Length: 62
Image (cartoon, rainbow, N blue to C red; front, side):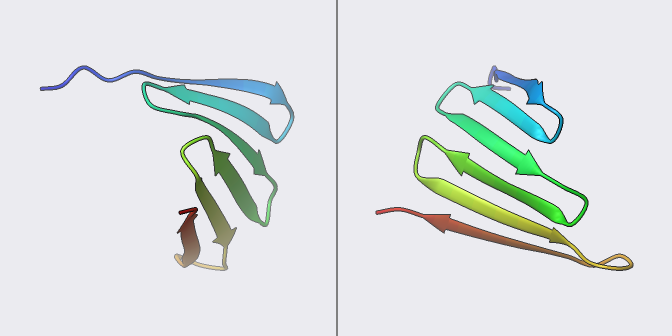
């Protein structure tokens, strides 16, 4: 089993700094959803929908 590293720090209410072996990311969240920007070029948008539904879209820069 590989050894992994992941650590998350709360900077402000609704803002998190996430660290792992390969990248650093910042997540901004609210009751409606969240947005994450990563140093490896990935941007993820998540929306909370009523009931058991959710929406997630991930884009990668080239």
